[in-house]
Structures are given as structure tokens and as C-alpha cells.
Length: 440
Image (tube, rainbow, N blue to C red; front, side, top):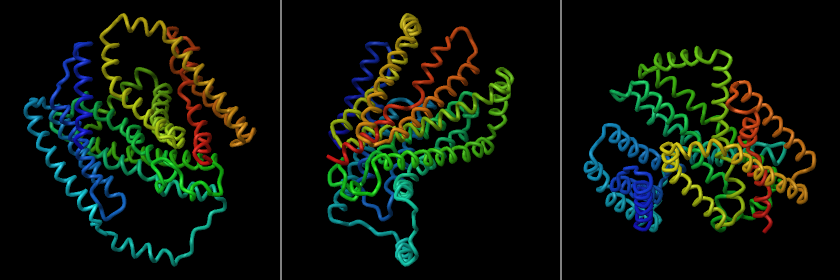
């Protein structure tokens, strides 16, 4: 806990000082560093605590951290002084340490409670019932993946979104800017939570002998590596749909109860008037599809990395992702403040995107050759997948051309964006990664 808190504190101080000296962004130093240390300390304490119900660890941890985050956001909104933020956060470090000490001591003594009660009796009775039969091993694997990981993302979204929508009921948060900010945070919650859920999906089996290996139970299943990946991808799609169903059910209720529904409707009517009904409908559907696809993509894009079974690959990928998240805000602020950088990026944007397309397509061709040579996918499956990907890109390009009808943006740039928007290389590499791990 001490090493982790020191690492996060040092990382924040380095980023804040770098932003202050390079781009003159005046970021606070003390209380954000304390906030990161407190978050890590409570995460460790609550996850080390033994619980009597399966899955309760995630529920308790997420609820406590979301509550702490909501308090901090309210303090930022009401512009609380930094000294008060330090007074609020500093005492939580010793409290989290004491809770972690109690949790570890109890777990090492084997003091794990059992709160199953009637659930255990129902499970024992279910053994006597006829077992469910599956027509194929692939169908059984799909059902098994849903039972293991499919409900985690909807559960996380259902725990976080109500706390975010509760901000609409705070006096003074009924302005258009506050409502728009709250809805934006709610809409990016499923993709963000998908990153958390993807860590579990990328593991082939939670009962592995080592941190990233496979058990014989996984290796000897009567399904191919491609079928295992297909089951995970299908589960990820169903999980993303369930998560967004939670958002679609809770957002209108919160808007109606908070009295902000007429404001949102007026904004939507103004938007329809400005762009026209057909384009407005297409843009709304395109935005909804993009959010759903982003959630699904976050669930599946880590498969080819996590399923390699190589610790150095997984840790390097996590480190690069964390570095990107840390640096994206200062870089965006730097681009926003520098007109010269904006001109250079706008002039060179087609070449930058073209290089990315070349890299993506080269990687896809190499992966296709490896898939065909290793017989993980048949020639028919490879051709069908390539045709479906091409049809999706062409359909997306057609929508872009119809919606963005302006001479300022050339059509070839829209084609490049469509190619980069549809996942291909990393998803195709997942069977290769699993086969590499499965047969080593």
C-alpha cells in the first residue's frame, strides 16, 4: 500500500509539474495526489476483505469508490478550498490502512464468512434437477462465457450510473451546461466500465495455475481456439447490449423526476430544426451505434493481448494505456492553445491517417496469412470475414458522405476514417494469441 501510494503520488506530481512548466497549466499538487493514494488504499483494503457472497467484493468496492468520487466532484463543483480537500482526504489513509490490516489478518486466519443461506440450499437442490443439454460444444461454451463474465459489465453500469444521475437532483445543477455534462459522463460510463470488465474477459480461465496460464480443463475443451474466441465475442456483444439497456432505462426516469426532461427535448428539437429530420435521425442512430460499438470494442480489443499468456506483453500494454490516459489531457490542452500546432496537424492529418491505415492493413494481411497457415480458420471463414468487414466499411463510408456533405472535407478522408473505425487486426489476432498460449 505504501509503495503503490508513493508511486501514484509521484506520478501525479511529475505530470502536474510537467504541465505547469511546459504549458503553464496551473494544476493543484497536494489534494489530487492524496486522492489517488486514497483511491488505491481503499481499493486494496476492500478487495482484500473476505466476503461471504460471491461478487460482493466488486459491489462494495465500486459503491464506496463511487461515493468518494461523488463527494470529490461536488467539492470541485462548489470550489472548495484545497485545505479542506486535504482535511477530508488525509484521514482516510490511516483508516484504509487499518481496514486493510484487519482484512488481511482475517483472511490469513481463514475467517471467511458464509452468507449463502438459501442460495446454497437452492444450488444443492438444483443438482437433483435434469441438467441442461447443449446441441454443440460451441453453444455450451457461449453459455459458460455469459455465466462467467457477461453480467459483470451491466452490473457495474447499474451501480455507477444512478450515482451519476443523482447529480441532476442537486440544487443549481439544472442549467443546460450541467445537464449536458452529466449526460456526457453517463454516456461514456459503459465504455469506461468495459475497460474494467475486459480484464476478466481476457483471461482464459480464472483458476489458472499461474497468473496468465491455462489449466488443462481449458486446453482440452472440445472446441477450437476460434470457437473459444467466438464465444467471448458473442458474450461481449450481449453484455454491451445489456449495459446500454440499463442506461436507456435509467436516463429518461432521472430526467423526468429531476424536471430537466423539457430542457433536453427543447435542445433535441432545436437540433432537428438545424440539420433536418433525416440527418438528425441518422446522426442519433450513428452516435448510438458508435457508443455501443465502443463498449463492445473495449471488451474484445484486449483479447489478443491478454490471451497471449505472456506477462511482459500484458504489463507493457497496460503501462502504455496508462501513459496515454495520463498524457492525453495535457497534450489536448497544448493543441488547443497553440494555433501553429493546429495548422500543422490539420495539414498533415491525411498523411497521418494514411500511415495508420497502411499499418492496420499490413497487420491484417499478416494475421490472415498466419490464420490460414495454422488452419485456425478455414478459407471460407477468412473470405466471409473480409467481405463482412468490407461491407461494414463501405456502409459507414456512405453514411459519412451523406451526413458530412461539405467541400471542406474530401471524400478520401472519410474513407480513411471509416477504415480506421471498424476493428480488424486486434480482433483477428485473438485466435492466434489463444492458440499460442493454449499449445505452449
